[in-house]
Length: 154
Image 1 (cartoon, rainbow, N blue to C red):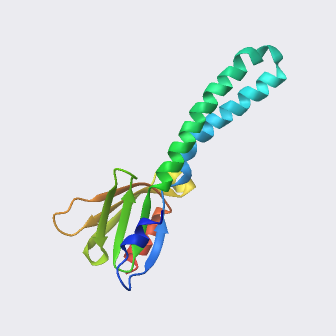
Image 2 (cartoon, rainbow, N blue to C red):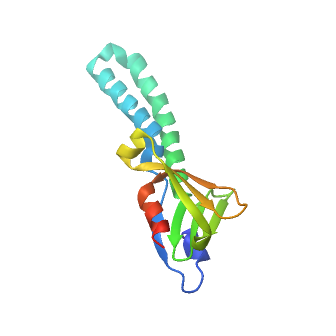
Image 3 (tube, rainbow, N blue to C red):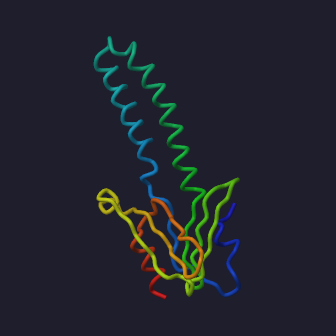
C-alpha cells in the first residue's frame, strides 16, 4: 500500500513538505511499558512480590501492546502534505477522512502549541480557507511551525 499523496498527485505537481502525527501518540504505551519493566524488576528483586507483580506485569503488557498498536496504526494511517498546489490531509484506513485546500485559497494557518508541545515540537494546526468552508483542524502534528512555513512560503 503506497502513500495517499502519491495516488492523487496531478501531472507536474510536486510534494514540498510531508509530516505525520507526532510520536506523542505512543506516550500511553511508553508509560505502560515502563510500569511493566518496574513490576518485573521489583518481582525479581523481591521474590514475595512475584506472586502479584508478574501477573500484573503480564496484564499491563497486554494493555501496553494495545496502546502501541493503536499509536502505530494512527501514525500509519495519517498523512499531511504540502504540494506546490495544495495542502492535503488524510486520516483513517477504512473510514477515510481527507481534505484538500488549494494554496491560493488559504487565508491563514493557525498553530496552537502547549508547553509540552513546544518542548517536544508538536501542536495543532488549523488551516483557514477563504470563503464559506469551515476551518480544517489537524491535531497533534509533528513540526507544526515547519508545516506552516511550507504553506505560507508560497
